Length: 187
Length: 414
Image (cartoon, rainbow over all chains, first blue to last red; front, side, top):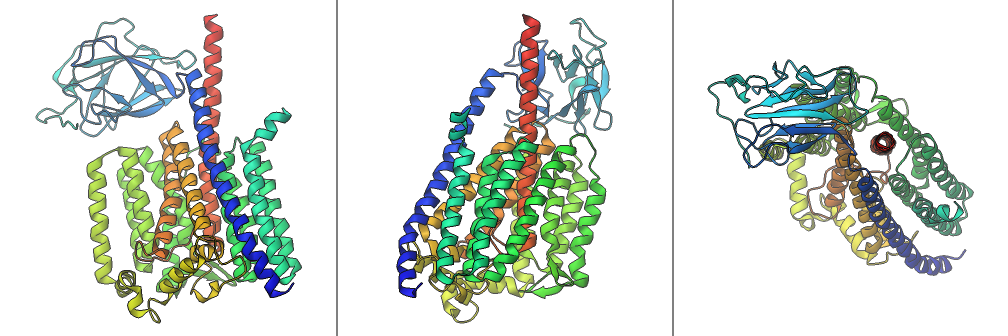
C-alpha cells in the first residue's frame, strides 16, 4: 500500500478509534451504574446481609434508650465515635474501644485494645485475653451493658452463662479505662 | 435466556475491545504486510475471549475488571507493535504468562480463607528479594533495581508489591502493628538504598492509606503525610538525581536539548496529537526517550489524540472505582484491605507516571500499569487484578450464603 493512501486511511481511522474509546468508557460506566443498582436491589431484599446479629442495649445511656438494637457485622470496631462499626457514645467508652470478629466455632470474639477493658458475662477481657460471646451473652463496657442476639443459623455450641436480663455486678474496672486514666473522646 | 445473553454488558464490552484491537492491527498490517503482526491480531483477542469465558466458569468473576484490564494490556501491545514490533512479541508472551498468574492469584485469595498465611516467610522472602539487586544488580537510569538471570531480567520490587499487600493486609487486620511497620520500614530502606524512589513513594503511600483504612485515625494519617513530606525533603537533599528531576519538572525548557529533553519531547508529542491524534502508525513516537515504558502515555496521546488519552484515564478511574467498591463490600477486613491495597497500588502508580508525563509532578521511573513494556510490571499488574478478582468472588460467595440463610429463615418462620 502506498504511503499516501495509508496516511489518508490512518487519518480517517482516528475518528473510529476515538469513537470506540468513548464507547468503551460509556459502556464501563454504564456497567458500574447498573451493577450498583442491582446490588442495592439485592441488598434491599437481604436487609441482614453482612450482619451476624444485634447487640441490645440493656440500660438507658446518654442519647440511647434501653432496648436499642445495634447491628453487628462479621467483624469491626466498637467505640464511641460515629465511624465505628458499632457506635456507642457513652462516657467511659473510648473512641475505638474494642475489636470484634465472628468465629464460626467460638462465636463473636471480643478483644479490647491496649489499656481498654470490658467484661463478657462477668469475665474480664483484655488485649492479650480475648473472649468469645455466644447468643445471649452480655458485654459490659463502661456504664453500658449489651446483650448479643445471634441470627438463626449462626449460633455456636457456646452458650451464655447469663440467660436472664440480670446484669453482672459493675465495678470500677468494668468502666473501660484503667484507674487513673481519663477516657479520650473524638468527635 | 437468549435475550439475557444478548443484554450481557460483559460480552458487549469485550466485543468493543476486540473490535478496537482488531481494526487497529488490521490498519497496521496494511502498512507493512507483516504476517507475524496479523498473528498478534488474532492471538490477543483469543486470549481475552478465553479468559473471559474460563474465569467465570471457575469462580464468580468480575467481568468489568477483567474486560478493562484486558483492554489496557491489548492497547499496550498495540502501541508497542506500532513503535517496535520486537517489544510487542515479547510483551504478548508476558501477557499470556500474566493471565495465568492472575488466575493463580484468584485461586490463592480464595484458598487462604481457610488456611493461615505464612506471613513471616513471605516477609523474609520479600526482604531477601529486595536486597538481591544491591548485591547482584546493575544500575539502570540511576536506580539499582534489576537483577539479571541469563537473558531474563526481573525487577524484584514489582514482585514484592504483591507480598507487601498480603503481609500488610494480614497484619493490619490482626492489629499486629509492629510486624507490618517493621516490614514496611525494611522494604522502604532497601528501596532507598536502590535509589528507586518512585517505588518507595508508592509503597509508602499505599501502606499509609491502608493503615488509615484499617484504623480510621486521622491523626496517624496526618502524621504519616508529614513524615512522607519530611522524607521527600530528605531525599531531595540526599540524592543528586532527585534534585535534577525536580529542576527538570520546574522548567524543562531551560535545558530542552539536555536534561529536559525527555519531558519536552513527551509534551510536544501530546501537543502534536491534538484532539484526534496524528494517526496510528504515523508521527514520530520513537524520538521520545524511553517511549516504550515511562512515556508510553505520551505515545498514546500522540497517535490516538487527547480524547482517546482522556478515555484511557477514565478507564483507569473506572478500574479504581470498581476495586474500591469490591474492597468496601468485603466482609472480612483482611480481604477488604487486600482489595483496597491492590486498587490503591494500581491507581497511585497510574497517577504518579501520568502526572510525571503531563508535568503535574516530578517524573519518577515507574511503569504505566498494563500498558508499559516490561514482563515484571505486566505480570504484577495482572496479579493485582487477580487479588481484587479473588476478593470479588468471595464477596459473591458471601452474598449467596446470606441469601441461603435468609431463605432458610423464611422457611422456618412459615
